[in-house]
Length: 268
Image (cartoon, rainbow, N blue to C red):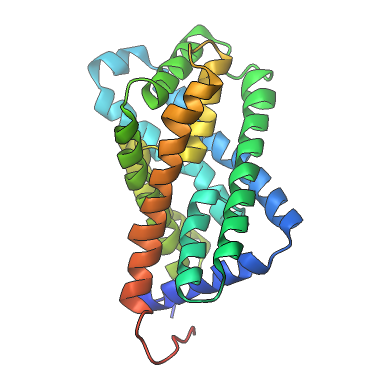
């Protein structure tokens, strides 16, 4: 078969989580670091696409849709290379934990390494390529970067960021889950593209993507302090992403397809 069933995909998610727990910490750290810039390229495309003043005033919905369509470039590269992304790691490790293939300690170590690896990689990308590289030096791009940072960290309430983050990682982990169901690259890319486009076009909050938007905005002049960013955006987005990926995908599909099943799920 060219496609796995949802039950088989859930079994594979659990096995991937167990494999991640056994990986060497240095390799997890390097893989996590590389995911930051890969996602950053997709974020950069979204910022560049939104730097269209006429469309912002006259067709904002169309502009958000176009931005959503280009954003998945980053997640596609992460999926194809198997790089370590914290937000999808939440799904893998939660499923493996519930399946009793990893311990709570394994889960926490994997989350911490992948999270801070993503953070370091993204900040490096913002500084060296987006910042010193001058990619966003034009006034309209700087204005757009500041506007996006303010929309992510200043204008929404804390609880709104948390709730939007639930939706964001629900869709991202569903995209990864769907890509696992297919065995060949084109189908994986197509399946991933749709839910990720949805999350990006809706402006939902992804804690790792926000590590690009908000630091870039600060770099080009947004009036946001690091402490304010951590409290107002990073913490609620982190918690919401854990709920979205860990509960609504990892736990939900474990319960539906693995919990209480007496026979092992076989993969073709």
